[in-house]
Image 1 (cartoon, rainbow over the protein chains, first blue to last red):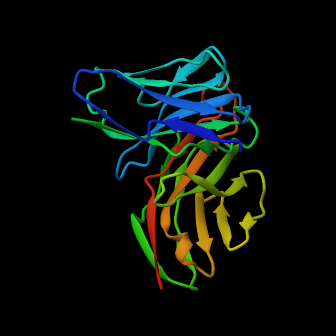
Image 2: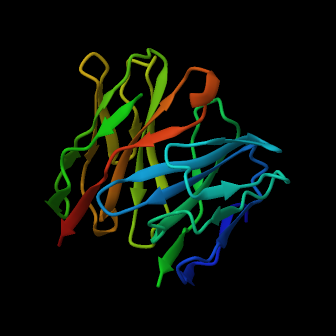
Length: 114
Length: 118
């Protein structure tokens, strides 16, 4: 079955530690995205990538980093510079950055900072 | 920058009844797409319905339909014959049809929690 796989589903981190969230897709999609979800604020875009080896900052990129070395993979690192990292993180992909732009989402990763 | 506003944090409906969720957006663009996504308790986002701004006809998907008012920048979702499985958080989203750095990005509203009573 084609889809997007995020791991881990739940992650606990101590303050000052970096953590990397995995996102893998087998949909052969060009574009991939990372969103953060907080209660009452909807989804906010962290980073996005339209093609391999290229990515752009979204609206709340500070304290985060990404890479796009392979078409299938778009890992997100939450660094110690992120002041309030506890949140639900959603990875998504789309066939390309154009067209109708329908996003397909993974099941999400919940990060809790202890 | 585009903004999307959902003014109803919570809505409720009786099973088999009809409910309408509101969404307004702000943009200076003429070419764009609008979406409604559903997020059930499992937290995975699912596309409910999509509307292209250049199409005057309102989109319909089975029990789900939209009322797209381009001049008023309004995009409401109507759920007919509500079912228990419709209970979820619903997000309205906007996507620019233009190129450049906004290409492909979705801007989401704050969400509306829908409760369905048996």
